Image (tube, rainbow, N blue to C red; front, side, top):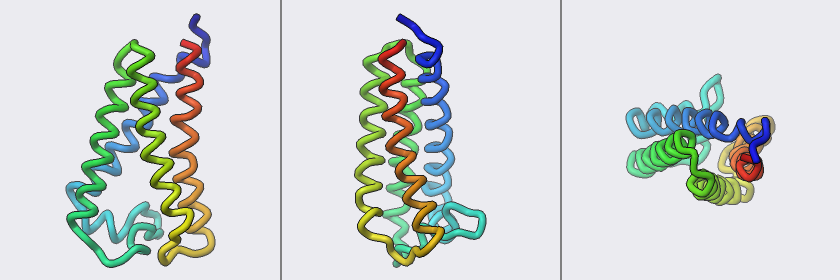
Length: 137
């Protein structure tokens, strides 16, 4: 059974792939700039967790790029099981990432705490919603 909502899964995965590719390429190929300026727009969320470690930031970038690749594959295939596995893996990574930052705020305060945690929570909710919609395809 295919529903219109179920048709959102593959484009949704493509959007998540693009976001992970953007962040991943930035962190992997410009780690110092990523550390100092992420997420941009005058905010400095990653720099709130000093000291800078090039190895750690490039590894994070590599992780985001791997997630982008998997999400891209999930967006390209018609196999619901593949999409489910990819979304579950991405959701697990994002849940673990959120669970750390929910307890360790680094040097963040005020609006940056709220924005950072909201963004991380969306990283958990989006794959979960897509998993549900994937069942409708």
